[in-house]
Amino acid sequence: MDKEPITADGLESLKEELIFLKEKKRPQIVAAISEARSHGDLKENAEYHAAKEEQSHNEGRITEINDIIARANVIDVTKMSNDGKVIFGSTVDLENLDTGEKITYKIVGKDEADLQKKLIFFQSPIGRGLIGKNKNDLVEIKTPAGVKNFEIKDVKYV
Image (cartoon, rainbow, N blue to C red):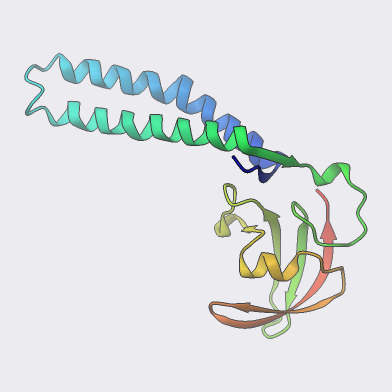
């Protein structure tokens, strides 16, 4: 069982989701199953089958989160001294030198990566291209969409 890096925020989010699934969603599903059972014949009871399927998904996610938490190697960059180097958990302000666009990414583990929230997986092309670089470095990153050129404007350990 390999340890997986995760930020302190990522671990906290998973714990919150786990509590929600166990304490809120699970009882709702049990109530829905009970309600559907009261409608009679289970063979042709769509509500019952839908509730059982939802229960299966919920329990699967609970198992998955428990596994992630068990394998978590929490890296809290707020407790590290910032030397301007991009590391796992750091927040990086970039300027795309090709378009002039400014963007901020946080380098995170696979279970918390979410491009919509600007949380990028440390082993993604951009993540790999940034790790180990320093503030003010110019970086060329090969992405599936082509080569992108960035300047690292700032590195924060927040």
